[in-house]
Length: 376
Image 1 (cartoon, one colour):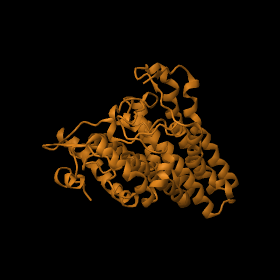
Image 2 (tube, rainbow, N blue to C red):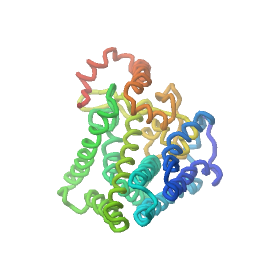
Image 3 (spheres, rainbow, N blue to C red):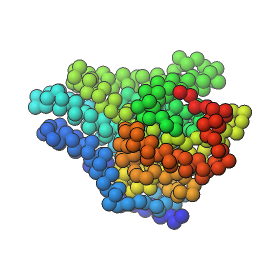
Image 4 (cartoon, helix red, strand yellow):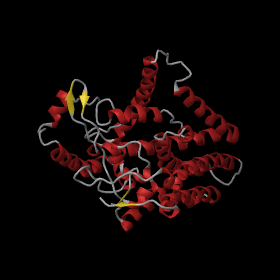
């Protein structure tokens, strides 16, 4: 595959388009009414429409590009954290100290804020938590605390990446499992598995889960600070608005998680072992515009194959090595909310994937039951 060089800020500029969504929530807060539709419509449908107009991005950056050439890409994720903090809590103060919005308008506004903190903020935290820099990991924690989902860092790094496509990964959506069954299951199981993973790491070091090194203490403190800050700025209404945006953000995250691995499993090798994670174990999408919005998250096949690659260096995998989504993430997430539509769209693709990569398995129902049973 051809590679291109990342040279200056112009190459990074399309990924900064996400910042144009922040003024939309302020416009909605100031004017109310129909403007409250602007944030979710822009995040969901504008970029979906641009995907149709602009098409696919099949080119790849040189994966050996030095860090010095990625300055503008790295700055993007760091600056967003500060901008999101100021926007979220600035809006909580603003709407609770002005009287021009009705209660329903305030709820609609923070629904739109949650779309942004979930679609962009959690996604940026995902990029940051994979880095070695303590500053970047700290920003990831800050972004997750704002949506009250701090344990996602432990679950993602210690459970999901290790066990993706196996029964031990709650986030891998099962074949024929609708999103409305997946969502409550993953909310419960992911929190438990994240805590157990951190507890077991401490146990191996001879430490109890109550030891200060357990990151859950940091998670709880940061989330507590966010709750108290919302209460201080906006009273009980402000606290409620923070909770609304957090709930929407978490829903957005888990919708994406559902799409990324639906129906894909790693082959069981016996003795509790599974094959290594390969590009074939995640759905890939090459849609350019939503790739800008989601900083190449759609190149998920390469992310799981090479988790430490920064987002501008993620490689696109073709159909020969990874299953392909028919649309970008915005449209796929919308389809996931309608299970019959989703199954009609995706189940044939899962069956095609099984025949293409594991032709030796002819009865998947019996195979999963015998060697790789997925928990209900």
